Image (tube, rainbow, N blue to C red; front, side):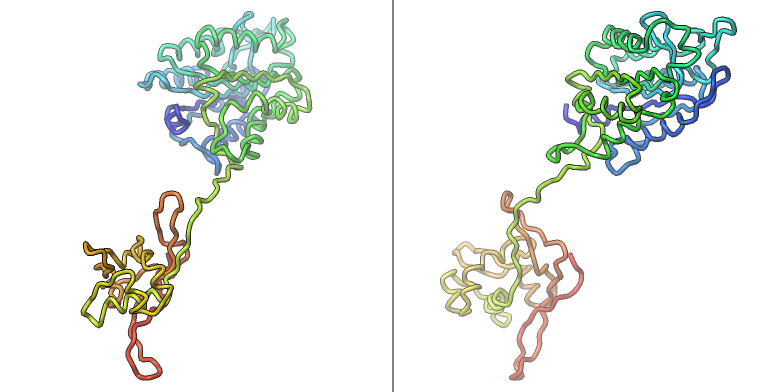
Length: 385
């Protein structure tokens, strides 16, 4: 599937909380979610429409569940892709699941741990998405630290490894997973994932690539995350080959498309001289190529008369006898009824001719020369092409 074909299949749900009913507040989740929207929908390099973007900020668990359910209900294609981004508090549930803490997450007052029934489990989400065979890209920037996490014996790197295994069990290779693996409380609320991703998109990559796709993340994202976290985190990046790795993140700002090689042609006085001869004071004539030099005395008119047939000039044509004659556009031009661009360019590969950008228009008018004789001349006029 080409990038252009896959882009319409992608939807986004970003979610997280700064404010909780029972957990300590965070400060930067809102900025984190806005940064993700900027990357995918609102930057000069963005590829995706905002109408494919759902954001749940400071919402309850039911809000996230409803968003996932609504997404599944609206699916008709079997190759749809959902990008989930979470920023906020998270918690381990057993040894192979993870809980996303929304605003109403509940903490047991004596054990000081988050109750699994009060959070949205990863297994809930991927189980629901699996109904419609949706491919999943999951970014988790969770503040998994502090007083709550001290009560859990499983290290965060172990949890993310188990999350990956769980995703594989449900989705095979149709998922991608990125986690900040924040292990120190003081670095948990700085948006390392979104900042690292934005750095990559802002910088661009190989100038020969039109897009930046998810395949670049395993090599680039970990280093950027480490830079933002000052080395205080161990990120996990898993992007499988195939549908997910080929999916474009954004346009590549470094992409440089070499201009097509062109020939540039400019309408000159010898060309007008040839048209005037063929016009013959209102009694048009036809000339063989060999007669052009004789009648005009111009080597340039003889050598370049074929160019006057190029679009958008279209002033001369070759008749059945192989002679050159004025076209309808040629007659209208020599009589001052139409304008033509002064300069045209011809693509060397396709041989298609177009008006050159910035070219003035030419209009034929009649003027008296120094001897009082009326002659046809061309003048530069608007519009500019």
